[in-house]
Image (cartoon, rainbow, N blue to C red; front, side, top):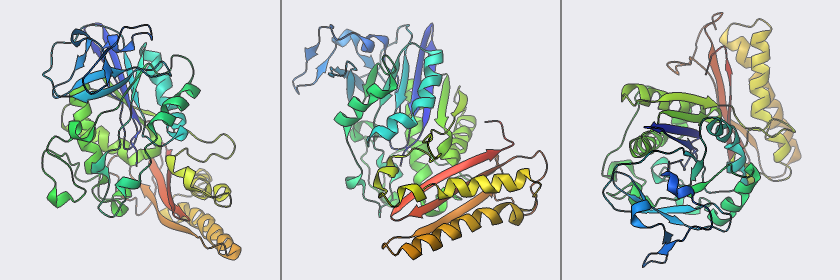
Length: 378
């Protein structure tokens, strides 16, 4: 459950960037947040360390305070405060979901883009309740902040300058329940692009994504947004959000981060794969790849393009059944969709029209997603 993306904003001469990932997001901080470890921090009554009030970065409804971390990356929490005028500086911001090293590695392509445009990257970690359904166990979702911070070192010196860790009450001041009917406050929905594909299995998921991203856009006011291609439907949803709500943003999609040995898309869910499941978890990527190969070989009918992909999944499912280890490979869906509408291409894939091959598969109890984009400039 995460959202991959990155934002950055120029305020006067100020460049701020933010990267998003599912159940987390990147938010931008005032440049002073990037102070060196030698900075003289003060301490609040709650024990949190923060910079003097004149050096805090304030958002419309929250105050970002600074906590010193041994990793030499300040960590920011939040509290209520009115918003003052921001000063000029050069700052970038990035986000990842709490849940492990994969999140850091998956974010690398977006971090790289951010560093090309900005001096500092601030990473935000947030498990977004609005992206969970009532039957999903929000309480059991991994929250490994100390470990996540330490693993950020793998991105290299200076890759991340600060980390924002907002509370649920900051992001949802009216409170939040997993039952959409019972929710109160302001939420954002993208009609027409949220109900299909991932939306079939996870209704309401993109409502949570659009809501938290809208909040971040309003808080950060970035000039550009970068999201990860692995969550391709999410990218299309956010692109529509930016267009329809007239957010003054440029939108960019960073390539999917993959395991260099076998191409498996990096995901926090990969940690749940057993030793037997891990090498078979590439089944979806291989299925999508053979569908792409069929198209490249001349297949244009939908059935002709998707049949080889379905055969790959069926063969892996048979192989796992024969192992008789008490788990299975099960296809959730494979989609061949129009890149603009996300509607299924039912008849013939026309030359030059472009399309999105995507899908989800269960490997044991772990649900994995992936996609390949054909003939579409992201």
